[in-house]
Image 1 (tube, rainbow, N blue to C red):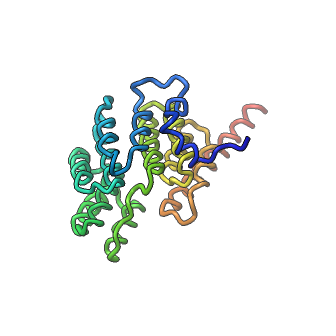
Image 2 (cartoon, rainbow, N blue to C red):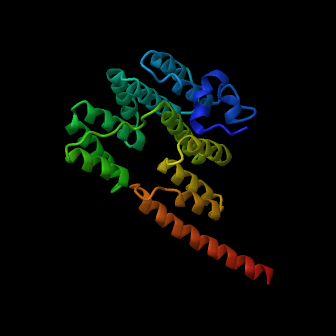
Image 3 (tube, rainbow, N blue to C red):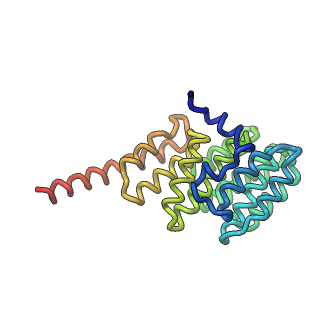
Length: 253
């Protein structure tokens, strides 16, 4: 029997649920299952149910901004822009330097004809993250008279975004193994997610698994604004790998 495609797996989630995909013993408090189920409801007729399920999540302090962002992205995709703006405003008010919050909010403002506000927001973020490729790309696009594309274009991409954000958050908070699971699942749904690839590489690097880090960084697309960052990390990890092998030869001689 032929294996199912990523799209086929995504289409089946409403019938089968997500817990078996995530972890064999996923707890009811695991945010991923609720978030992924919510993303299957990212449509004009069901968006309110999706947002309600996200709002019921309880967790660590950083969940607050995370939940607002996920709700905003779902509402944006469901063409409920006024509601999406309210959730973006709330997330932005809580964290002015959250990259995905600012990019998502600026994108929606640019599509609402509020490009000056979007530029102001992006310029403020650039002070905290100087010359970040994604911020520079967004500023250049707006100055050229273009609207910014939504942060996610499909429910499947939204689910990948949620998993990426969870994976990065847990990976930065001593949850490396869970972070690896979430990031790998994000890349299963969206193999070209550049930020997820960088986060996965960074996590492997922190675990001194340099070969795996290099493989992750090498998957960043050649036309991605983040390619230069990936290339630098590849060079760093090659250096660490070479040094590690030299030490191994010394110890074994």
